[in-house]
Length: 58
Image (spheres, rainbow, N blue to C red):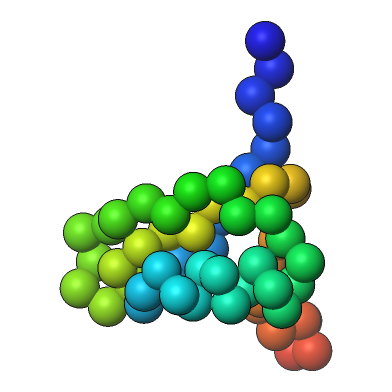
């Protein structure tokens, strides 16, 4: 069985995961707690990993 690709982004709280789902049209699969005191959750979405890095300076 092949594992489907996941797109993971950290957030400060679960609502931010739902906000990203709405804003970018991604399907939210799970919200996982982290040990980070600021980025408290990992938002797990379906699909290939994306990046928010600024590419203007490359």
